[in-house]
Length: 333
Image (cartoon, rainbow, N blue to C red):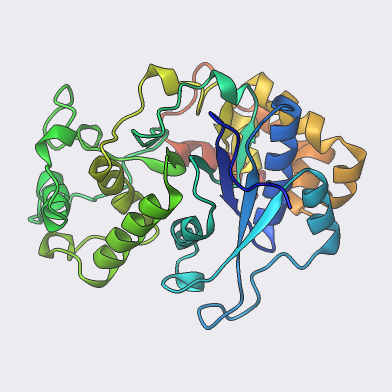
């Protein structure tokens, strides 16, 4: 069996896969990685939750064609046990899966991601973790007469003995959401999956089970991973990504979320990569089983979506894009 540790200077990639939508997204992710980075020296692991008391049904990929296609693309399945979250919070898979990852620098990617450029051009400093800034002000919500966003966030930093003030972006107005360290959990990285995963699990479980009083009126789902993530990154000496990481959510990776959103707002290069890998004969026959792929890619409805939007002048909020797509009968998940 080959060594699990990547060569010097290389890193592993981790994503989470389950039966259903994620298995088809994983095919596109793996195929785009191989197409754009044929010499990638690390390993692509797909973490797969195992059946157990926290799942009503077996969450593993049962489709033998999908498994074979993923393995042909060099994927290694990584089984892990769901001990804390499971079906009640599938976002927690990315937290619990880290404990199963071999000890080496890693980049986590959500499955709904395409790799479109050279990962070797990204200036990773795995000792200083960071995460995606492609997010909106989804949490916390300012409640009438409730704690301010500053009070909410500070209560969390205080709970875990972390300094709050250094995390603030003082160029942003007080109480504006961008002032606070807040990430999308679509990608993040660190030098140690075991250390990062243990801290991530500790913080997320504590927030879920014993939230500070300032969080009483706040919704924790589905934001729990994104609430805990900045605390973990700050605890390990990380922070907001600098220009050396601009290729992530840029020319190197694209976290597209859904295929209609991809066609609506992403670059021509992203669409070209999607259609190139989806056009491979061995993947085409499998991806056609996935309704969004069948309609958007193979029946060309993605091109109809693309014609509805000006990429140079998109609506500010994703919800506005979704509303247009729903009105036109082109919203699929």
